[in-house]
Length: 228
Image (tube, rainbow, N blue to C red; front, side):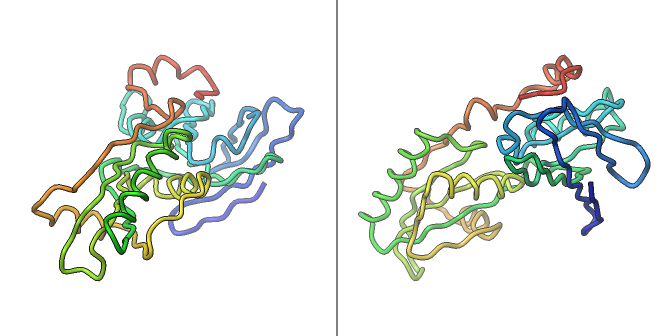
């Protein structure tokens, strides 16, 4: 087990032994220990969260669920960790978080040279998402623009906290879009400046595994170490 402070966060590497029910890892700056339950498929939990409260680690929360728990007085004093990395062998990197902004958005803009190419790309991502749904809701838009280097663009919008898992999802479905790609907050700012709506748009729902639950359900399932 190894940990170090990085830019206000702390990372913890954990070796999860296959034949053990749990492993003990020291987290944070104090001497409290956190027992992480055995996960049969550790890599399936990348991008999900752990909430440690009253000496029990609960694994498998979404970012939206963690935001609810961190702001709830009923479970105050807990610690939250993002599962930043995991391997099939059972190694974990956990990133401690104290606040999650589920309102801020980011985006990816895929520029295309023609409307026909943009339409093909637009339909292609929709078809891929029907086969492998994203890990969070995304908004997929096709824009016809003027005054730019390219005449059309497809834009993918998502909550900023999910940027890493969106990147992994695009890699997993082998989506390679645009003749030029831009990303970040400036894409969202560009969209908000437009006076006309996109030519086409769709909200793509996440995989059922990643549907966020209300606070009442989270409180009801608190005794469960595995939330997903």
